[in-house]
Image (cartoon, rainbow, N blue to C red; front, side, top):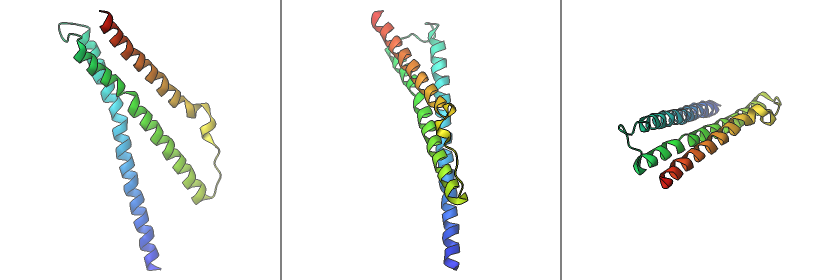
Length: 137
């Protein structure tokens, strides 16, 4: 009997550690698009004045890279949130013995994915325009 108490305490401890790890990973995923967006914005603003930063191929590569960094962590963050929601739903159903409605069928469950896809398409189009203009100059 005493052994069972230790196993449940160890299991709870492992769950807490796992949750801390997931929180740290999600925290990093949240901050990356913000940093990338700010960096890309600063770079775009700086290229408005060719005396500050001339728009050469190196700047175009930097800008393309920073722009590509925006949607990737957003997608990963949405994926983690989705998986976390499914795990929480499963745990609640198993532990509380209640049935939960399927919330994934509502439009508000798909809207973040749609917004991420639209942002990704816009960013890809911006990168194509940046390089298309470079080739036609």
